[in-house]
Image (cartoon, rainbow, N blue to C red):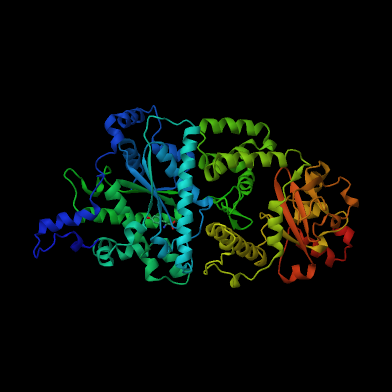
Length: 610
Ligand SMILES: N[C@@H](Cc1ccc(O)cc1)C(=O)O
């Protein structure tokens, strides 16, 4: 970006107007943001705008709002609504490749972007190959660990492939749902390393840095969080918003990208970018007719998507404490399907709007059907299938659907053990997380065996990440009733105590509810020996016997250490049983524990307290 690169050779003096001209060169508008993209010329855009103005059609912003994508709009809601109607602008979502795969949390801003693509906007997914090296401090109480360049390269490669595949699947879904074929659609996948690698620090500070105010930057949540509750912040992290802002300016001036979409943690970065773009526009001059920053036709806007929590208050995107990856090699289609299949009835309509391209009217019809018989989980199956189709493609989605429908076809049917086994293994292995970090590139045994090293890396990454988070979940006394694995002490397993076990596992709200459920044959348990953990093709479920008062639950222990319980079609809990002393020492608890201890202390017998 240095000026001298653009100066004619052998010229000792250059006049001011030439300098001005040259200065504009690095960012010359291949597409001038003032000019709408081509489709508007053939009148199609104007026709659509007219129909929106007359109220016959929803505006782009109304569509995004109706589906639940809009948390905050920076730059003015009305102005953005107007702009999106009048002009076919460019829009982008950026992601830093901090891991080899995106996780389901990334889908929210991406889905908003894909919708805009479907409606004819120029949509860019930007891979932060440059910014990832600096590290976005947003929402983090400590700095990210520095990654080796090997790891960085692999993450970039892997995510690039994934974003590409996602675009392919979006286009297939676009065709499947038969959205208007009139609009010609345009998208791009860019990597900011392209321009950040050659960016001069002097140029960045001189131009962009001079337009960003310290006071504003210090007041951002991400900075305050670190200064007040975290471990401070490095200058590099503090300057991160400048680089993200530069991306925007680059794409704003080159490609007419006037809107940035991000998760709610990106609000500060997006506002900083808007300030910077405004400042750069002043430095690099504007064509005639510009009304300055206030002119919505040429201004930059930001949109943030909400932070998702389920109706029960859980953070969206974690399963048993682990991230739900979109990469098939890190989380297979069956498991991804299963994650969405477990969506609560109260959340499913909202998720259908957010994570699928199914038109709203169709979603309403599905919900009507769902309400008639919620136990069929029609809406959940539809949601799970569409998400797998988006992430892994139509073929995988069909396979996952068939596998799930078969395994859960009967209340007492068999269930594929892959998920259960994985969780059991995690629960029983207690690695020391501090000894296992991913700062070193994995040793690629796969290379010798002719296996793609990237595949090996991804699998190892996922396994290690899972082990780290599940061990902290379990060890750190955070055994949350909503997780798939619960730890219970041996003393809960007594003859006749099944209702208490269901309660302790967090599957029901009281012992009496557990008792009722068992009586109505609505609670199931895996029969041990019906499939072994070494050869896990399937396990058999049977309803917890109605005469449970006479039954000893220990006869159901799988591998002598776990009870695998289910209520309804797919709410599964794995109860890892440990001895009472360990349970006490770890400071763990379970619903009903206090009551049990009190009764024991009062001298109750085991049969009285069961
Ligand atoms: N900072 C964003 C990613 C990003 C990177 C570059 C951008 O230009 C925009 C967004 C995040 O961490 O999620």
